[in-house]
Image: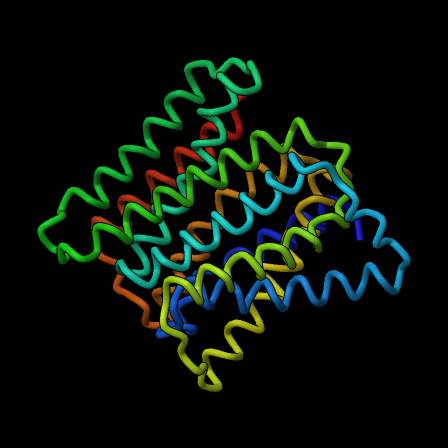
Length: 278
C-alpha cells in the first residue's frame, strides 16, 4: 500500500468515528475511551511483539506526554461531547481541528497564513456561529458537550502541529501511546464514573472503534504523512466532516437542519479553501 493510499484509508476510518460513538451511547465517556484504547493497544503491542519491534516504545518522557496527552485528551473529550450534546452538532464542532491547525501553524511553526488561508479560517468559524446561533433550540445541559467538542478540536490541532517537531519518533510507538491511554482512561473512569456493563451493541461499537478510528487509523495516517502526498491528503481531509455528518444522520443520530447544512458547507468549504492555498 502506498503512503497516500494509507492516508486515505485513515480518513475513511475517521469518517466512522461519530457513528460508532453514537452506537456506543449509554457507556460513560471515560469507560468508552478505556475500552477502545485497550483494543487498539492490545492489537498494536501484539503486532510489535511478533515483529520484534518492542524497542520502539523506548521514547523520552516528552514524547510519551505528547502521544498519550493527544490521543487520550482528544478522544475523552470527543466521547464526552457526543454523550452530552446533540451528536451531529458536536461532531461538526470537533471538525474545526483542521482549521485550527492552519491557524496555529503560524505562531508555533512560523508559517505564513496569507489572505486565502485566513478567509478559509474565517468561513469555518462563521459555520460555528451559524451552528450555535440558534442556541435556544439546545437544552442548557448541552453546553458542556459543545465545550468538550471545541476542546477536542483544539487538543487535536495542538497535537498535530507540535508533532512536526517529533518527526523522528517511529510509528510503532503509537501502540504504546494507545495502551497507556487505556490505563489512564480506566483509572479516571474508576475515580469519576459509575461503570456500566456493555450490551452486545455497545461492546461491538467499542471493539470496532479500537480496531478502526481509534486504532489502525493512527498508523495509516502516520504512514500517509511520512510517505504519501501530504498536500492531497490535507485537502481530502475536509471531506471527512461531510461524510461523518451524513453517516450520523443516516444512523438516526440527529436531523440535518438548514443551519446544520449551512454550517457544514462553511466548515468544509473553509477548510478546503485553506488547504488548497499556495
